Length: 401
Image (cartoon, rainbow, N blue to C red; front, side, top):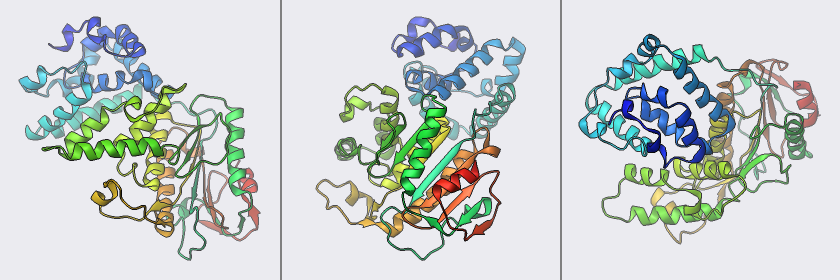
């Protein structure tokens, strides 16, 4: 069956909101090439569990496809139409399993030497879409905060080397009440701009007391879920013939209830947390990896106005089989190694924030928790400078504003 034969009954397994969107855009879906449509359905089938920014982007894309003339549609999608598919792919249940179709499509493109042609078609489509739907600037400059070095008593190495060329480095920040100042700033922004999923607090350890209105996740709070996932991973790895690709596919199909998360008032956040643990590399066993991946995905998907990430100490690295082994000994925290990880993580957080609309006005703060070093990036901060002026984080934030 091809896209032109689509009927609304075929979307009955989709969640309610996704099924409604499919019904509203059925004509547009029917006009898409099979090499393109499942990628769109992969996003659509998750519509009920997407953040507002993601839903708006998908709604806008479908509305744009619906308004294209036949000639415009041909121009936009001709690259995809030229892709040849195998009979196996054409007969695949791409409506109900679009993600699995896309995985198999990737292998098919590679073996048939069509990967470059598909990439060119995808880039061309993305360029046209960006031109037709330019992103809107945020209502207030974004603020990113990365807190590194929790538990580190002393460190003589240089910090924030990759960030320093982009902002001002402060050597004499008073650490007293620093965490509270930053949490209060995040809370004040959430009250001034009460937008769902627009203000986040991610903690790589145990979350500090904070405003419950913030969207918050922590590594410590997910310990039971991580344990359940690791037990499932060990059971699957022990099965004959189980390889990494099959394990990845099985993990991607897990739902919150599969790992012991009871039904809550926020199914979007539940699904987000499960995806962090099942799709991220090392997020199940390294707190720094968890914090970094959570920040990346929050920025990419929710596009928050405020994102505060607090890194914590991870366990010392060992061979992966030993880390995954049942009954393994808990190793001591690697405070210095975690600080190095978090320092690079702060840089990645800034880079990912810069990919969002309004980057030229965005603000970013990195702080060595409990110590005197901090860095600030923003329009009011002179780039590549250093300061020995005594101050605190509250004053630093006011200078940035």
